[in-house]
Image (cartoon, rainbow, N blue to C red):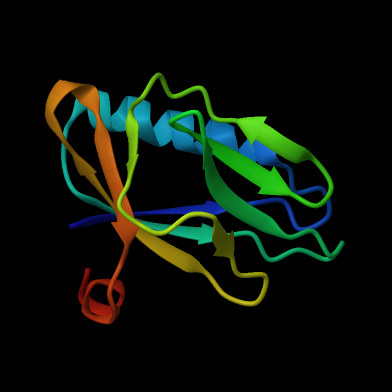
Length: 118
């Protein structure tokens, strides 16, 4: 399984940046479908918390600073994890992205074995 990592800016983290990184990953999966282990690192020095939630069937990135930012992935993100999902401010959250039919992507939390051996 390939690995990718998102690291938000430590001083100016934003939901917009998180949405942009996810959009790039989805475009990459369009070009070459494959299972991907994604590490999301939102640790920052300005005490911003981040979460992934669902609103009207679309993922929404939420922070205490930016509020809600709609992902606008055109019904591509299929959450197989519970929502809202708080992204830890002291560790990296790991997800497995698996392409599904119709350009959709299933997203679930990675288990321990996947995080270690991917």
